[in-house]
Length: 327
Ligand code: ADP
Ligand code: MG
Image (tube, rainbow, N blue to C red; front, side):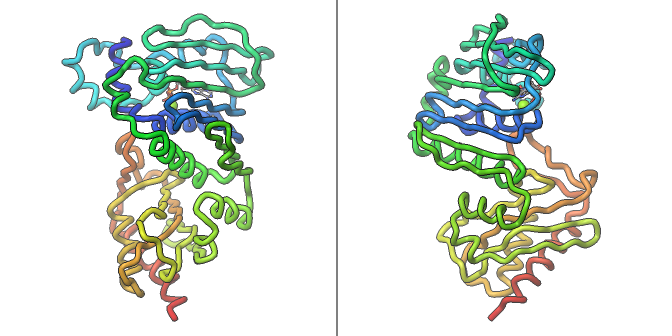
């Protein structure tokens, strides 16, 4: 089974940023409202994430690191099969198979904290007493220490940190009600408090995306035919040299979708597009039954039941917001 973990890890665990994404999603799943993320050397040396979520019971700690599915895959010949199965329920097993991992937790009902460790193939089954407030801390050290081929694909500390920061940014933009603190090499990058109003949401945006964006953005909040679109659209006069400020969330999950991109681009182009990149942080909310955002666990694709309806809604609303400010 550990071989299978390492194979699957190739899919889920590509670089420090993918570890951070999996760990933060677990913390949010556990209901955490505060996430403390400490990084060393772009995450290659150390990733430490502490949350105040529901925690993990003593007896469940070793299970959290074990693989719950597809343990029948034991040879590389089965690799093909693995890639078609999806990897949900395997993130911690995968990560622990290619790192030195410490998992410490105190669950809601418990009065004591417990810890398990795993180092590469040596599965952590020994549960030891530890000291920890309610919630969970996961520390991942020396990523890929036992898989030199994969380690070779890691880039510079700066590049890896940029990828990782982008993951944190996307989650911070999707959960204003959660606090995010990020530190790198002992230096604080930001400390985002949980927010519940527009003003503070815009402060978070300014911290994450720069105050220029928010100073040059129009707000949007419209609803029609069971669809709601809200967020911020950069004025067409506000230019960015790269298409790097484009965030679109569908029911709280960031997506990169052709249909969405097309609708936004068309609206810009139609009003006063002049070769600039549209900038936006937009949230589309719709009946979860009319959209599939889990097409692939690591890609950000989305499939709308009525793509035409969604496209026309996005195009017409964004077009109107932009046209209203046309000089
Ligand atoms: P999945 O999230 O798909 O279930 P993972 O390997 O990511 O699989 O996590 C395994 C299990 O460990 C989770 O289902 C959850 O029960 C537990 N777990 C992981 N991280 C946390 C956390 N931060 N807080 C509480 N429970 C956690
Ligand atoms: Mg998970």
